[in-house]
Length: 509
Image 1 (cartoon, rainbow, N blue to C red):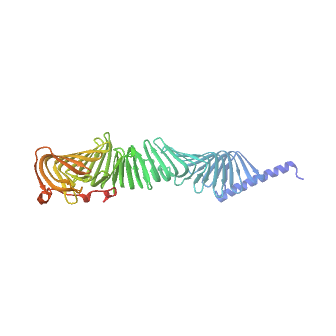
Image 2: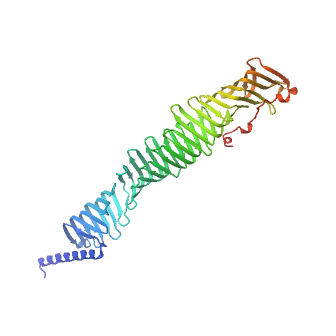
Image 3: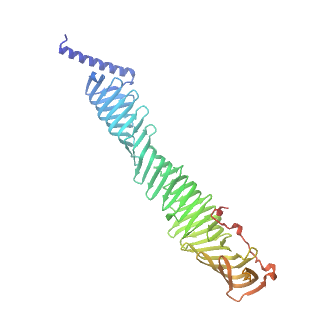
């Protein structure tokens, strides 16, 4: 029989031989096995599957990774369980720490738990648990994580995430949030590149920068240069204006935003909307323009004005809103329609100015001149001003036209209807007198042809009802059948009914 002392010496010799064989094998394979670089104490534990138990200042190496801990179990199948101040270093930049580590050397997968921190150059990730693939250099967490990017001063949090160390890219999902002293981003899914500070969004996303709020579902945001590019329906709220489009770009430093596809620009309060195909917005100057099927929708009291032009410009300053429409301008309101080549509107005087062959219709009346202006009060037409070659035409019947012309005209509206018109300066008129016959039907009985320095016209139901001459006129009343043909139409009479937009859709025709 072996004595107890001899038996103990034999066990110690076996442990020493086993350790030597393992170390020799690690050297021979050239790092294929987990190498033990240091331990204050080492013990072979046959009962736990032949594991080597290491304690005190443990250092291990596997491939290009170094592992440090207070204690560890190293198994023959290349599994490692490490405890206490665990640290993994890979290359010259990546460092991971935690309380516990389960490592499989066969597939080089590490599971770090407890106060986990992953550092890569200027980035630090903290999470309760992290699965890290040392071969692919990819880390995954599912129990919530927090990333601090010291270079960009960004703090990102999410329910789950993946880190691709080779690409310096994070993929976040579930309750994603990016915080920065100047902005906040919340979304469902985000990609973030730590070397560039560029984020990509896949899903509903909100970016808040001071008073600027951006909403999107797909796109990129350069946090370093504060530039956004969105490829799906997105909107920007800045200075009480909302710019929306199918595709959108915005540079916060310059304040320039561009939108394409089903564009909508909405002013504060929603009283002013501009639709179109393309928009350019300068938030610092509070200016914008919309083109391509551009339509301006302006709420005016209980009614709404619909306006189209090749390009619609809007601006806001200390005096209020300014609107400019250029080329092929047409507008429709239930009581008022018009066409021109250039239209201007300003809050400061609530007046619409029409230039370049303007024409205005109200009821049966057509008004033209070199310049036409409509002053509004409480969103309703209040005064009409026509300067230069002022001309009023009203259809007396399907054949005859009442006509009034002068150097200028002033019109007076009541309840959104033109009730009175004063023509001044070399005024002339052709007015068809009417009389109700015995059969109860009103018929034209004559035509009044007159010249005067000033004429006042009374309107009823959109037609001329009375004509008054302020000073003694040079007038002739002809029976209708005896009126000279040349007296029935004044020079310059041009009925432009075919240009009149009769509904909202017609402003585009």
